[in-house]
Length: 160
Image (cartoon, rainbow, N blue to C red; front, side, top):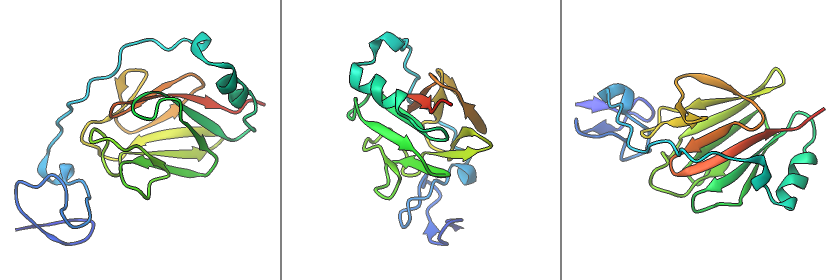
């Protein structure tokens, strides 16, 4: 019998997630299934409306903004103004993305050395930057497209 590495709960062999705490068991089972393809539409800066453009220009140095382009929360904005911001389907995540294509604890944004870094948290569907599945930590640049599940977002960092 296997046990959850996060909480110690007994698991069945077919489990992909702990039924007690929701932790991903992909590392234990070797499951690397990816079922959500990256979105292939190109983002154009000209597509921004005046309110979004003003919000981006008003960003203070050291902060960043994720603008949701696609998904059930299209038009939403998420400010990255802490050293660590979590994204996922769990209600306690800083960026709550309520869709079954998003893992409970899907990704993590980390501010360090004047940059924002994105890390996939061993999610089932993966995390994409500029339509490329990331493996490990990736430094984000202004205008990068981030896809988490069905949510497509554009990253903007505050300018000097």
